[in-house]
Image (tube, rainbow, N blue to C red):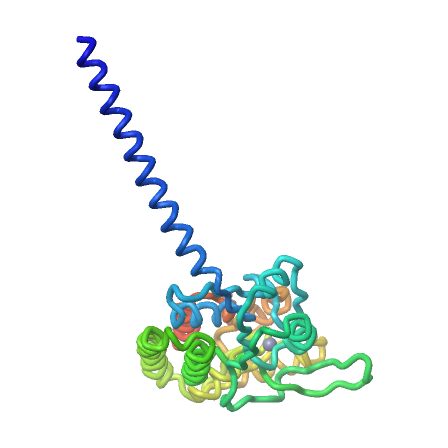
Length: 301
Ligand SMILES: [Zn+2]
C-alpha cells in the first residue's frame, strides 16, 4: 500500500516536471515569435493597415497611427503612438492627407533612421474637393484629394508600392511578399469586377455625400459625387439650397454620411429630397467589404 502510494507520488512528480518542461518550451517559442513581431512598420490609416498586413504576413507588426473613428485630415498623434513610431523601421504614407501634411516633417526629424515611403506614388491625384487652410499665409486654396484608396484601381497601385517597400526593407522575405501581394491583387481585382458589374446600370447617376471621400470611385465608375460640405466647411443655408436643387434635378436617392462628421444637415437634406441616409466608413479596416457595401447602396438607388 505504502509502496503503491510512493509510486503514485513519483509518477505525479514526473508528470509535473514534464508539464513544466512543455510549458517552458511553449513559452520560449511564444517569446521568440514575439521577438520576430517586434519589427514594426507604421501606416496612417486602417485600409493601409489591412493591405500591409496582407502583404507582410507574420514578418512585420503593422502600427496604425490614426485610430478608428478619428479623422485623419485633422488628427494629432497620442504619446503612445509616438513611442511605437520610434520603434518603426519604416513609415508608409497614404499621401496628401492632413495628418501627414501637419506632422510628417516632425516625425521624420525625430526618427532619422525610419525610412519613409509614399503609398500613393504613381496615382493620378485629383484636386478641387479639399480645401487646405493655411492660417499663417491668410489664404485658402484647393489641395490634392487624399482619398485615393476608395477605388480598386488606386488600391492596386498602393499594394504595388507597399510590396516594393517591404522588399526594400526586408529582402529576405521577397518570396513571401510576392505571393501575398499576388493574393491581395486577386482580392482587389475581384472587388473591381463586382463593382464594374453592379455599377454599370447606374452609370452617369449622382449620389450625395457629406464629406467628399468617394471622388476616385465616382471617377473610375463614371458616377457623380455631390458633396454637402463646401470648401471643407459646414454648408451655408444658401449652398444647401443649391445642393438640394442639384440633387432633385439629378434624382439623387442616397446620401452617405461618415461617423467623423455631424449627420444633422445630411438628415435634413435627405428628408428634403426624399433620399435615404446611408452610413459608410471609407476608413474601415475591412476594405473589400466596405467598398461592396457602398457599391450596393449606389447600385440599389
Ligand atoms: Zn477628405
